[in-house]
Amino acid sequence: MIWTVYILQCADNSLYTGITNDLDARISAHEAGTGAKYTRGRGPFKLVFCEVARDRASASRREIEIKALSRRAKELLITKAMSQASRRRGVATLACRQAQKGET
Image 1 (cartoon, rainbow, N blue to C red):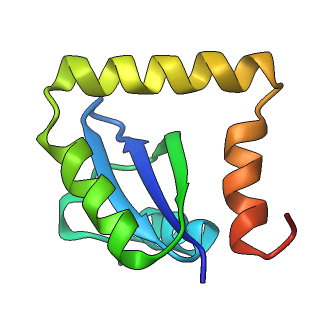
Image 2 (tube, helix red, strand yellow):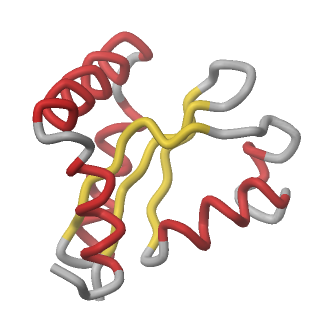
């Protein structure tokens, strides 16, 4: 099973980091108010970062690493990922979604 570490930018400009094995369903849950307690009432959300992990343990470790970063360090991580994705025309987010659906 493929796991994804993701960062959402909330409507209040805060950042939420989480993991999932179904990115689209998890974002829908956040939007519906049934996701994490932190995200309730903070939508709409923008997916600003995602990274594929080989298993849940790896995803959890990476989530902890990202959550320990300062706001500035998270912004740099997001900027770097977006820059790389834009050079590949949005491939990073698409790759996360395809990997979860077994389309890679």
